[in-house]
Length: 325
Image 1: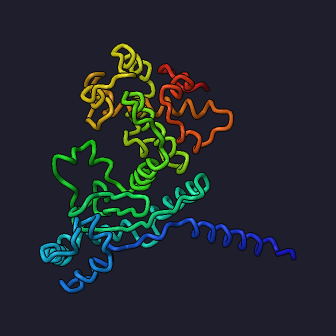
Image 2: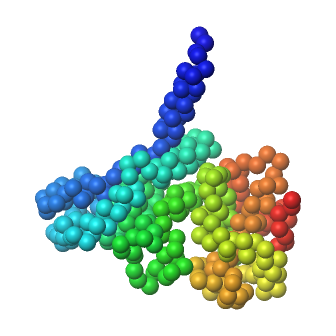
């Protein structure tokens, strides 16, 4: 049967919309359920219905105690916290980008790994009472109040939230962070290899995995560098690499030395004030990226199953050079 052109176009749009909806992850909006529970008994019932959440997010291993119920009761009735909660609802409406981004990523992971079972995704708002993210193979809990960005009425505070870290607490970072964390289940490594190279390759594989499952996501959102940091580091990578070679860092095994290049820091002082922290992770991404691009038939499953960091490094041919045009 042939349809008129206009009807055919309409059917195509409906089909595309139907496919798009299928790829959205259903977000279990427990933030809304919690703030609807205004009485202690309602909060107790909420925690009883969501035992895994109570355990993972609130640390209630033995069930909800009276102090937890009282704390949550105070919070959900606090006028200031309710203003923050309203901001969350405005920033994360029922049809939100996070559901679409995770939907695309989970579909792509399923294509590569047919046994992959997408985890349940739960959202929470508590005024920073729980962690920002909890990610397991079966459950993801997103503390949405952490990810409102710089315009939020309240932002997480404390020594664990310096400005260079706090900058990443915005909604566009949630999905790539979740996908990178999930990559650990597929990222094979050799436990006997304690070199910095092994750590670099581990992160590099995780970043390539994230980009493969979320091809449209910006590199800055994957690694957490600003666009300026990415550009400057890319252009200066020959000097960064020279530092790694001169200081014989590739096969370094001492934890204190490795931490200087692999851990989060405002900048890598050993290289210079313009060099971002965790520079070893970025170099690992360059190594793995070049290796992956050089494969005749690149397969993300083959890459993630490769546990020989030295072999991968040698075959990458990376020596601090930029990409070929």
